[in-house]
Amino acid sequence: MVRLVAVAISAAVLAGCAVPGPHLTCGDVSTAECEAAHEEAVTNGLFLEDGEQVTAALVQPTESRFCNGGDEPFVDVSFTLAGRSTPLVVSVGRTDVGALVVCTY
Image 1 (cartoon, rainbow, N blue to C red):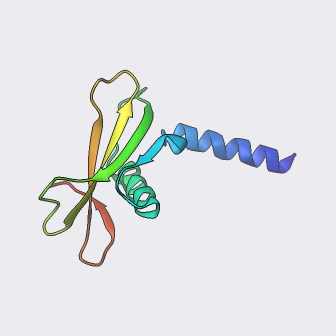
Image 2 (image 1 turned 90 degrees about the vertical axis):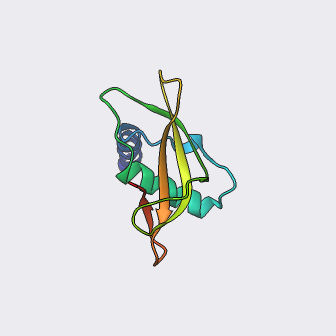
């Protein structure tokens, strides 16, 4: 019973964070890099208005040529939001030591 309660609490916490979970699609990006880029985008680049809800996310290589003062552009994370016709896109780059960062240009 305790385990069931812990699972229910974990599910509620994740759902409250608007993380799409099974609705994450990785384009031409490895699963590990896709999930890491998605996490960076959700944590440091996804700012939702009250009531907005993510219904899906797509991680794909970026066509951007710029990312922060010298970081290398890497991927775009496109979030589909309920009630919006266009996705919200968060670009993610790599620092010179390989860490992923949200591009703020």
